[in-house]
Picture 1 (cartoon, rainbow, N blue to C red):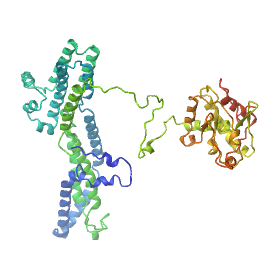
Picture 2: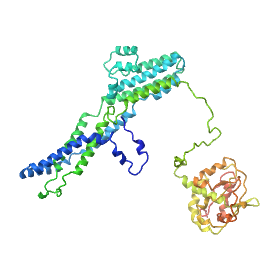
Picture 3: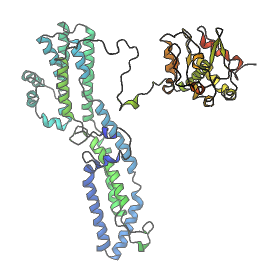
Picture 4: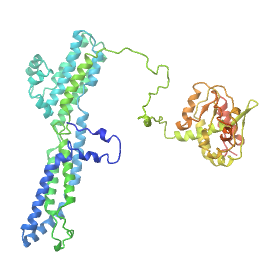
Length: 528
């Protein structure tokens, strides 16, 4: 009976909610069309009587009554009373859903803790979960009209297999004026204790866990029984209902279109059809209908809980878990990521947009800028006589000077938090062309003149993952063969060297050699 439309609104799109307005099952139209038709009929009758039946003197008297009702009808706090009431009902409805009895946790404990694949062990596990399902059935029979129609007597419960004839005799012999849904729970606890004494449950901790889950299940059942017993106070429901219907009874008179010739304030036009009054009735009465439908979710309305389906599902799943699936394990094999430390399941083409990098904190982007700046320095140095010598260019001096102070602080912060590298890490490529677009046309160094660094270990290559994915295509760890030029003009299109200040070598030494960290002194951040 539950109306599900989640797939229809999975993605926000143009008129996505408007498509739901055309549905009938579970809609406001199905709940309200009778009251709405009655309101329109009564309004039309009063309008016809006022216009065609009443005399002039009677019309003047009706007009005074209409103005009087219009003046005082707005003083009824319909919005406040109705809004608070619906909020209370919705919270109560959702709490009842959260307390529906599900035996999943309990059947997992029974299947794993109650040992024995013989017939007695199988009988023991099936009896335990049957007692659990019998408890939920007795609760649903007492709170749900749909379940009560399905199992009107205990004979139907026995016939459905939830209870044996012998158990029914014991159940009926127990004299109690109260609802006896708790009796199967007592049977469950006693049978679990017997299984512990017989060694079917090998540890007292397992028995304690089973009993704790049983108490949790019993709490859910008792909560549903309590919601059925203690409802929203009747006086509050009466106040809300009277407030709504009294307001619209007054609107039948106060919202009539009066004679414009009488020059009453607010009655300059005669539209015959009160459009906004009808909309107001639709919204307020529909609001009240929402509360009427949700105040007891165990009825037979379109949006009530599927109690009968819950009973069927719980019995089938619990018996399957403790019987056929008990110690029935598939053969263990190595997974497809056995030799891969970086397990990444593949994406289909339709789900490619959902492949996103991990969130590393709101300041990650700030650190990435500083990290890319350091790599920019690293890729613009050459080895001469076994020394790392910077290549200076005058074209980028002004650009670097304007960004040094802001990026220098971030660079210092980043270099104090990155652990020392086990081996020198050298990069080459066009990583920082995006940061320094003016350097695109500068004549650079040929590929053959790039610094030759030893092949870094596999752990060093993971540093490239710090960069954004869009930039990793231009990052290459030196150790693999550099790409060959595609033509004689390729060297001319590579970004040129970077201007490096006199004390910028500390940054290069910091990356070029392992060892303790040294705070680099960047241009613009130097202490005089």
